[in-house]
Image (cartoon, rainbow over all chains, first blue to last red):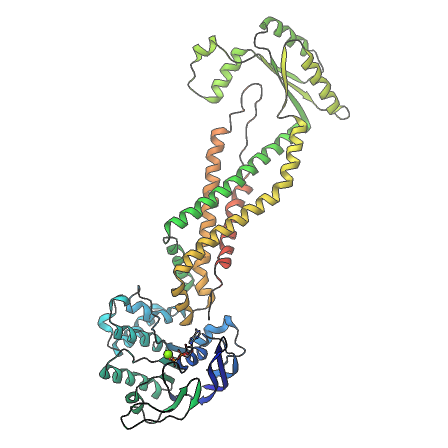
Length: 229
Length: 292
Ligand SMILES: Nc1ncnc2c1ncn2[C@@H]1O[C@H](COP(=O)(O)OP(=O)(O)O)[C@@H](O)[C@H]1O
Ligand SMILES: [Mg+2]
């Protein structure tokens, strides 16, 4: 489902990703971890086509990112959903409208849009907020709106960039359960996080540690904090 | 289809944003289209005039105002014996009534009758025959000019040579001017759409991120642009018609009898149609949506 080989990426002369390789099958779960500035977000954006592939190879949901022309990018994005670290939801639109957006751009009929949006909002405990404007709800709720918008299309690949950053432990675990459900039902999930609790919640998952743009061995110290990479 | 209809409505809804920019755009489109329409109108009437002079020429002869009417009448008698098709004569009084009718204004006729500003005039029709057409016309003209008491002789509808020169010049600038009009319209509309789009950059980007095709993002803009062109074009034709109604008869009095014609239907339809296309096309200038 995702194959990355010798992927490197630079902003100007600064190499942010160096020679990254990994491979995920359908239904695999990958934790992407590493300190701030390691390149997690950059990797996600490359996989989603928001940043052009510079070096190496990347196959995502059957699309070869090297040769995918910009005007066919939307086809990739209909298979690959992303939860941004900074949400990127529309503050002046309601929770409902934000979550319905990916379905609308696909031309789905409104009856079905309603059914799907309602189900997803209920699953993320957002049903009471459906009519609120996104700028009126809390950060944690906004984060869940971003997740809802990503999963509402039932994507083949789900990329989530620190989706629990604004949530307390209980909500984090609830959200993790949502991701796990998709994983079980065959969605390939890539989840960037610092949280060891999250990682421990899914023992069978793969882990990729980044440090200064390179893939490294992960290790944890006795207190359970990431220390050495 | 349903999606298309939704996007169409969204394009219309976009017109509600940036009211001032939209207003400015619409005004500019109307103004440029109006100027172009005016130019077309003048050119069209000149062409009509030139065509009518191919069959015959009308001379408008103006006498001195203080020449005794008796002497003028004698000259009218004499002219009618010349080699001409017809002569229509107007005493100052007749001219005044005719003018008042054509202006349909509430003139103070009693006052004007005493201080009539109009001279005696005559409309002489002269048919152009093969061979000695324009030479003969010139000769008649100089004979008329040489009559004692004649102040001025005009060709109808205009001085022939002048009309031809005009047509040549204006035909030369016809396409450049129409081109300029289209470019201005395109740029102004594109600029407004760009402004509109800049404020909605976030929205367009997010649409792209969740899988909208570029067509989905651009179609509403295309609709907005087309509406600008259509509305601007239609309103400018309307304004032109209003202007035309107020001036169509200003030259329709003795001895000129020139009625200004309005543009033919093809032009009337072409102006909004072309502007609609330009407006729609300008949306492509405005946004090549950044997908990355
Ligand atoms: N658009 C950009 N232009 C220049 N440098 C960037 C840009 N985005 C990220 N970077 C740099 O790339 C590095 C990795 O950033 P990022 O991928 O956001 O890391 P992480 O998500 O792991 O915290 C950082 O040093 C950051 O400053
Ligand atoms: Mg990041």
